[in-house]
Image 1 (spheres, helix red, strand yellow):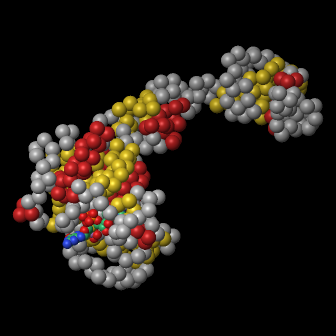
Image 2 (image 1 turned 45 degrees about the horizontal axis):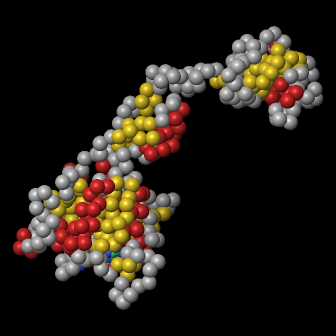
Image 3 (image 1 turned 30 degrees about the horizontal axis):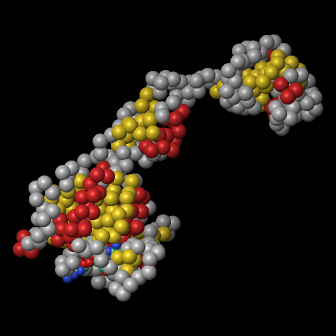
Length: 438
Ligand SMILES: Nc1nc2c(c(=O)[nH]1)N[C@H]1C(S)=C(S)[C@@H](COP(=O)(O)OP(=O)(O)OC[C@H]3O[C@@H](n4cnc5c(N)ncnc54)[C@H](O)[C@@H]3O)O[C@H]1N2
Ligand code: MOO
């Protein structure tokens, strides 16, 4: 990284939001798939069709705690004239050895336990006296408290149809059927299915490893005391949290001073573990804009990073390129905290989600009625104001002003109000486009 900036070579083109985003995403390829343990694959995109190896349930089993019986033995049973059966033992979930139920016999059976041979139906314990000799039971005596419950007699008060309260083998999924299609995003129910069919690992596109570093000699770690002219580094925390929220494994690298050699060395150190590099600060036109200074005019081996002006507010100065021998994508965001956040939402989040191979990379947008007038939106720049969106009312209210240093208002917002390039004023009651955050 040679770090020489030649101002005469600065491109004068002003990029639209859409053109910059298209240019970024055109250079991002989804990460190569790897085999991951189920919980590590949560939120990832499956790249294989998964076939069911063996039916679920694997065997006929009871859906109720009760008694496994033969249908003829309980035919016509009532509370007044119960069917009295001999209890031959217990079948608990996980039971390997099953007692055969003969005529006039019943086996106590628990939910999920295999239906024993000879039994044709299950009667819930509430349809019986539970072996007590009294009225209808509301539960079984716990085995520990009453081991005798697995023997003696039970009076059944109602008849049961064949296969009543029996969950048939294969009634959930059958061997050979497709459990999940390639392209499925693995949420909790999909992970449950994979586990149920016995898959311990799956082939997915992994979460990208995103390295976040902030730049600025004024920055001090939260928890430390500020000296004159210093502020706490909030961007690296904000962006690391946002990267996690977008689905990445994010590594926060502490704030780097405005020194090209330090920045260069810090970035190079991170190449080993980065699928994406995100920096904040140092991209505008000042004398200490270290990111721009360091990453402009790189050699062919070092990569290419282009610094641009975008027709948006906040977020005007942006850098994008591919760095190092592996051509790791780098997004250099402006340092103002709101600018950094808006830039993340518009450009970094879709990049992370493209790396993951997710089908839907953008935040949802909805129309909403703006409850207050907006004035002074800059002509020719798309403005992203912070807003509080009320879904029930279908309204959005601007919070704070347009200043890109307003972190307090940002923390109150749940949406960005989009004011188009050709609009400088919005009247109260006008419909606006709102980008929903989360
Ligand atoms: N003469 C001009 N000056 C500026 C222009 C311009 O076009 N001409 N653009 C302005 C715009 S718009 C933006 S946005 C900023 C972008 O500046 P940088 O990306 O170079 O960011 P810095 O100068 O490093 O910092 C800007 C601002 O943000 C604070 N900051 C930076 N990093 C952090 C952090 N990690 N946590 C909290 N706050 C941070 C920093 O202290 C500055 O106040 O340039 C304008 N200037
Ligand atoms: O465009 Mo800067 O990003 O307004 O604050």
